[in-house]
Length: 85
Image (cartoon, rainbow, N blue to C red; front, top):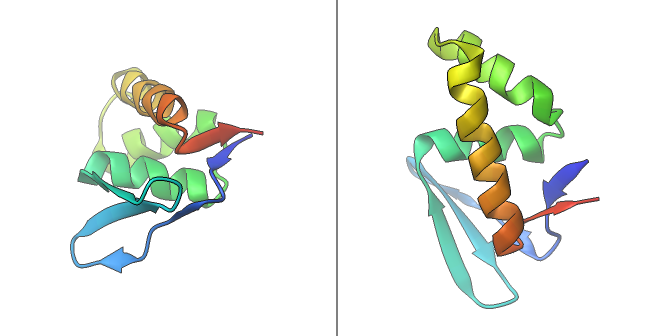
């Protein structure tokens, strides 16, 4: 299961999602699409379901969204923001 690393926090910020990484003191500000993916992962939504939910919400083909979800997860794993536990 993919989940946020325990050293991260994401307090609410008006109109944005900013992730604070206590390991290095950096903030990662997410665009609305990435924020939707992050929020779903943090809510323990299965990765396979995230693209389906976003596609239905935005009226877009699931295949068009799946590549973006996969790319975000890959990048976040490489940065250590997400872990595959």
